[in-house]
Length: 295
Image (cartoon, rainbow, N blue to C red):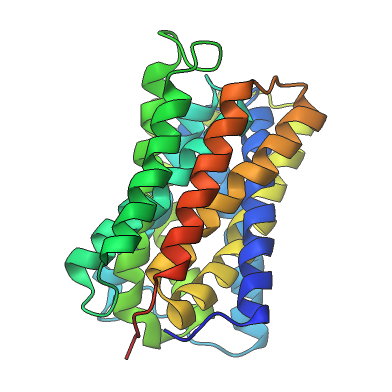
């Protein structure tokens, strides 16, 4: 990976803004859509502009080539599973809390990178940053106003969903030379293949009567927060590495709290603010000590 330049930081911030806004849109979408159907429709809307991009740029989509199993596995771990888990979790917790819980992604991403990537090892000071960031999440879990017996399980589901993003990112690096548009489109198509039978089997989407607002949020989630955002994520991931890319999860809570407070009238407690400060301190330490290189 290269040292982060201004364009890299801008794209990371843009990705944080997009994904920070996605959680209150997921919240709105859950009013009309069940988790499997929500994920399926979201991926469907994401695939449309991606297919158009590949068509007009004459990019060959390799989803069903000899490497199909790689695209299928990434689609499962990077999109299908986390989308379902986060949709389930967000239905029972505040949207900004879901954004904060996504801050565990850099923790799992750094650990996985240390184990599986020879050029992104965890140093002593990087470990300190990881521990500090994780302590911010633990501190948040002590807030009974935000987290209680009724939603604790759903918070854990959200964290599990964020962990699969790290797993998906690690798998994506294995085929980074296959091209951004191709990889993004191919993995999206495979995730749709997984989601269609799950939705039809467990939720019978043809019986739903979604509101216009929920559907509008779902279109945004598909086109912007999935299709467009995944193109940005792939670019950051392949140029700056897994550890740097997962740092976007520390920006998500900032935008998530903003959107949740001003658009959803959700409360912000003092413990949330302190947790946010601790988490940001953790990412600063990790970033300052992230000196690996991707060859």
